Length: 179
Image (tube, rainbow, N blue to C red):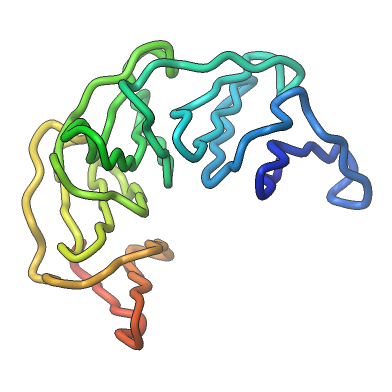
C-alpha cells in the first residue's frame, strides 16, 4: 500500500512492479497501517479511513472534527493515531481498542503529534515544538521525555535503539534506553 498526494491509496500485489488505485482516491494520505485484513489510512482534514477487505472498500471513521492523521502505530491490540486539528483541542494521540471502529483521545493532549512508534509496551509520540512523549504502559499514561523543544517528524526503532528525526537542522537523536 502507498498513499498519494490528493490521490488516495494505491495497492500493489507484485512487490511494487504495478500499482492500482483503490476506491479511496481523492484524499491526501499521510499515514498507512496494515493489520491483518484491515488497512488504515490517515488523511488531511478527513480523519481516518478503514478497509476491512485489503483496500477494496473504505469507510471513514469518526475522530471528531476536521482531524488530520499524521501517523499510526500498533501496540498489542491497540491502534494509535497521531493527530492535529487546528480548530479544536481534540488533538494528540488517539487510541482505538476495537480495530479502528471508535477512537478516544488518549494523551499528549493539545499537541500536534507527527510521528508514532511502539517498542513492546513503550509508545513514543513525536510532536511539533514539544519533543517526544512516552508511554510505558501501552498508552494509559504519558510523560515528556528529556528531548524537549524539538520538532520530531519521524521515529524509528531498531534493536531497542530509538531514532528521532527532527526539523530545522536539529538532526537525528538516538536513545538506547527507551527515551
